[in-house]
Image (cartoon, rainbow, N blue to C red; front, top):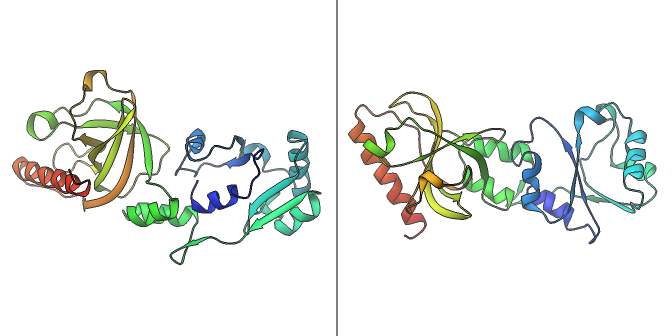
Length: 256
């Protein structure tokens, strides 16, 4: 649900709707999380259920499911039907209503595609990813118990179990964490805890005091900027000093 998608949506009328073909790699805004980025109703079609249909059969399905359908808006590279064998030109022939084809959409000369956004996230380039998304990248996860040494030896953190979302490159990030109904400034770590137990973790430290015992079960983390990569420290004290420096940098970002 990035800026190129929003360009498509801007061509819908007030009674418009969005049809999503669900695939296994839609991990920027998986499943129903897409609804957070649009006010239009969304209808989901698992790829496994329709990939056998020819182009003609797919259009027939749309007619059956949306009998008042008058207009279809697609991107210039849209393909459909078995093995993606049908193009926008075929759609214009098969559909009797209005077909609007949107040209490639660019931001600062960069074409906006999900695969390019994924590449930026995997490289830890949050700023470029956010520029193409049109919003700060967000992941969602379940609050879980951590290793238990953060509050005692470093700073208190909340640990998340994140499934389905693409996680940015390992490192420390300026973030905001959505907890108990609001986004709060925070600093977050993603990666293997190579200084302590070596396990992979998603942890966030919120600057405000919160009631951790009665906090939300599901949390979200919104990413603004990468502070540094993952790094191994020989002694815990060095790690603690680095964490405090990370916190200060994140606070400076938010001018706190």
